[in-house]
Length: 448
Image: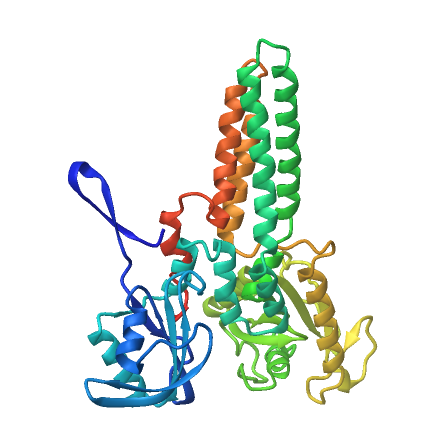
C-alpha cells in the first residue's frame, strides 16, 4: 500500500512510489526550535545533499545544513530508515532554529531536491497505508494533537494504545469463526453436521449483536468527551445566566445587564471543568413573549437544550421563580438558585453571582455530573466518532437480517456474516477503505 499505480502492457498495474513529502511538524510561528519532517524514497538523498553522510539510525547528530553553497542552519538531524519509522517509509527530521527565514530556506531547498509539501494528515495516512497504524489509532493521533483537557488526553491515549481496535478486531475474529461454521453448514448439509454448525453460527451472531448494541448504548459518551459536553444554561430573564457563564469562564463572555431580554442569541464558551471539556451556552431568557426577536431567542435556547446537559438558573428571591417558564422546558440536570445575598431559603444549591458565594460548590457539582455522564462504569472503551457508530449499526443490521435465514439456506446467513465483518473492518481499516481515507484525514494538521 502507499503506492500509486498506472496501467502497463495488457492492463497490468505497475506500482509507482509515492512522492516524497515534507512538512513542519511543530507549531508554526516564531519559536526556539522547529521540527521539519521528511518522508519517502528521496529522504536519504535529501539528508546527504543538505547535511552529508546519513547519521546512525535513531541517533541525533549535529550537522550544518547547506544547499548550493548557501548555509541554512546548524541543526539536529534524526534518521529513521524504512520500515522502522512513523510512516513505514524512510523518514528524516530536521530540528532547526524556529525563525521564519530558516524554515523558508529549508523548505526551498527540499522543494529543489524534488520533494513536495505534505497535505493535511498525509504522514498519518501513509502510516495507515503501510500498516504502521490502523484507522482508529490514526484518529487517536489527531485527538492527541487536539486534546485540551486531561480527560480528552486519557481517552486519546487509550485509543492510540489500541483499546478500540482490539475490541472491534475481537468481534471481527468471532465473526470469521462464525462464517466458517456457516460455510461448513453449506458443505456438510447432507451429513448431519450442517444443522449444528448453522446453529453455532447463529448463536455467535446473536452474541455479537448484543455486545455491539451494549457498546452503542452510551448516550454519545465518547463523542461528547472528545468534542466537549454541551451544557445549556436556561432560566427566566434576569436570573443571572450571563453572569454565571462569566463566573465559570472567569472572564467576560456575555453582556450583563439589568434590562430583561439583553441576551437574544446563544453565546458559547469552551471551559475546562475538573479536567473535562464543557461547551457552556448562555441563552436568551425563556418566557412567554410576543416580541418576535426575543421569541426567536427563546426558540433557539430550547433547541440548544435538546442535547447534552441543562442547568436551570432561577432567581431565589422572586415570589414565583418559575412563573412564565414554557411548558415544554426540558427537565434540567441541575437546578440552581441565584441571588443568595438577598436572603432566602430554597431546597438545593443557592449561590450569589454578585458575591461569589456558592460558585465553587457549583463547579464541584458540575464536575461530578459530567464525570458521571462521561466516564464508563465497566471500563470499556467508548465510541469516539460518528463513523464508528454508523459502521456498527450497519453490522448489526446485517447480522439481524442473517438471523432470519432458514437452516435450509445457510448461504444467506454466511453472506450477512461476511457483510457484517466488512462493516466492522472498515472501522480499523482491515478491508479496502480507499474511499474512507480522504474523509478520515481531511481534518488533520499539516505534519501529521
